[in-house]
Length: 183
Image 1: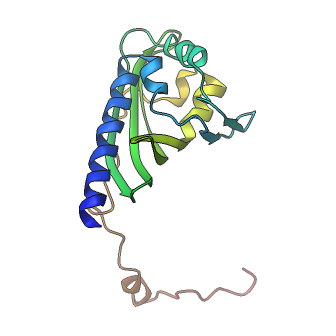
Image 2 (image 1 turned 60 degrees about the vertical axis):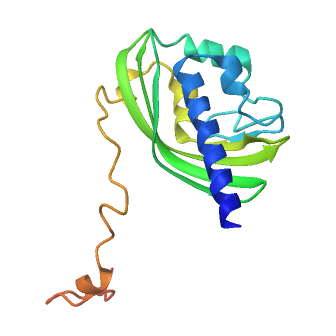
């Protein structure tokens, strides 16, 4: 079983590398080839749900690519993959950097979670989740939401582990969960 998971994870990482490369190349056909025909997406901006064959659509994706002057930068940091033989999910921090036609250069990090299925021997994205789809759809070109230089991704939990909660409870003068009257 472990060997199968390792093989599945390698296949998924290769598929995601190609998907990222297609985004950088502004190749709509290649981007959409990584999605299942029955893909479903939920977003914060109306219509709230996209579904069916390639929910983005080639025309919409090409129109989005056209909002950028020159190349698009796209990278994945802290990629985690959990896979069985036919179903997988992954999450990562994604960084989009580009020059907006109406807003100048920007760079933004966001969290991305993908549900994938193995269909006809290929790992395809069946359920993408990213808060930036809502933002880009709703306010495309609004530079104020983007940082000109987003810098490196936030540190992973392994680098900066959660502080020991028990240590805080034993601090002199620390009252823990006690509350003052009226609060």
